[in-house]
Image (cartoon, rainbow, N blue to C red; front, side, top):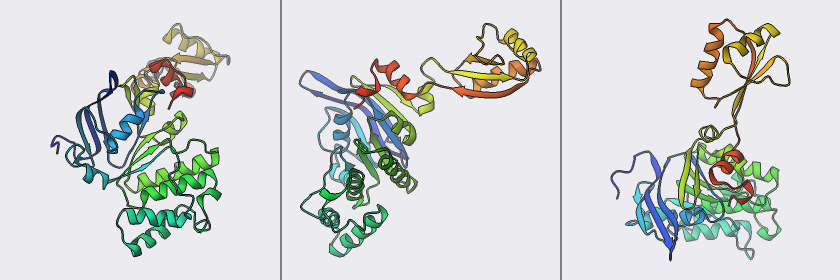
Length: 317
């Protein structure tokens, strides 16, 4: 086991490399995911996201690097890793010849839970995911949102500490997507760690504690959503003043700041961070210039993705 793995890390990756023939897919990835948090991995088509998930979930091997999952070394203890993780793929893994309850009990058998515990665990999850009324029906009769909830329930049958979710809400309507978001939030509140890939930038913004942006096999950025948004230009602070005199005084102090459509509002370029905001307001306070309203505008994740990869949201996969 890699003894340098941080104690609070659910997933620790150092120098991860993978190639297929002459094509380098992962080129020295370093990543750390704290326990009980959500990391969202974003990237355009062919960036290496699926390959990374396959390696971390023991489906394929790496060419190099050190990986620890739940404190267990991926290379020397893959069975130990498998016992700690769950994987929900992009497509439904349910058996349409079985009922929803039978699918869950089958997963319980695969986890060697025993008949009594499998039945009890299936009942718990059916209730938790609001599938009790559909328990005796084939998943082929379920809506898309119900199938995804059943998929996730099947992943949870063995009570994994770490879950890999590969585009869990693809194809769902907005209501079903938000239901899945609530489920994911409850899992994290219970201490589960989530490694999420998604094609929806809004989803990453809503759920992720940290976001990693993968492009060309390399991590080009990592941080909170707010940190990533401050990396690209276009942020500004809108300041509104009580009267024309205050506005003119602010223009004199700040210099060269364009007036907004509202004659009493200035739009000041800035990243919206606490430090820069403190400096800005300090300069106005020093001249006793009163600001009656303030709003911070930062680029969204679409802007971040386009700026750092040169691609649009449509290519996130």
